[in-house]
Length: 302
Image (tube, rainbow, N blue to C red; front, side):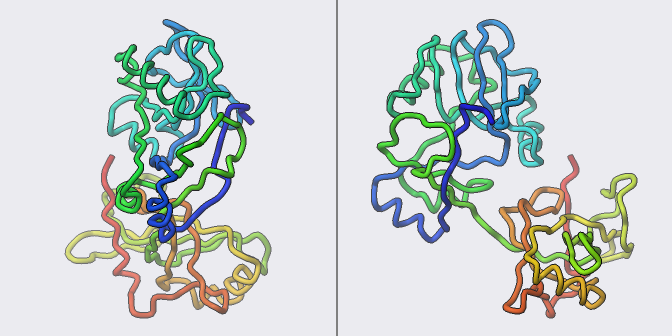
């Protein structure tokens, strides 16, 4: 583990945001779906980048940072959402959360306010770095509205947040936005003959967007367009009762429309961090009023 990594120790639901905002004791930052990194400046040379497990990453194109400077943030890469952002801006980028060292001086024992002021000095004194490093916005009001604007959610931190302490910070909380998507059940991956490891779910996409080698479960003309039924998400993390129920009843479940919850949807049609919506009997929630051919996904071409 990277000995500089600091993460959230707890989670809240969206309906708790108004109370935290009214208290006046919290600030909020966007939660990005990229990869946490530490970036160490090497003067005019390429900065040294490490991920959360502590492995070095070779990321070309990042602007040099002053020698003895260490920032932490989210690299737009390594995940589908991160790669989409990198393609959109046309170069590598890091959203900077915090400044831990400046000119070789250790700031981790200073207050958050002191570290943020030093970060302001870094960005104003070296404007070239703003090409590939971006200050992560911080806001103290309109949590709910700003929450809805973000891709994945918010990280909330106490206004009086003190020294930087690596590890899970139980004073920080994260809030993610969950939504549900309807998919067609296509297949299952088994862990044993009696238990299901994950469900393969999908929908109908324009046939021209099917990639070479991708499995097509069915072809049809829908609404005058050639469409293909393909897998879009693998839904795992099923409890034991659900695994056993699905294994026994999969023949009746295949081809049905079910609900999957997650933290938003990628352009490809897959759901971020998908999980099955189940009923009281631990079975998937089947949409009996919706047909498979209504599960249409118009993917964007990259």
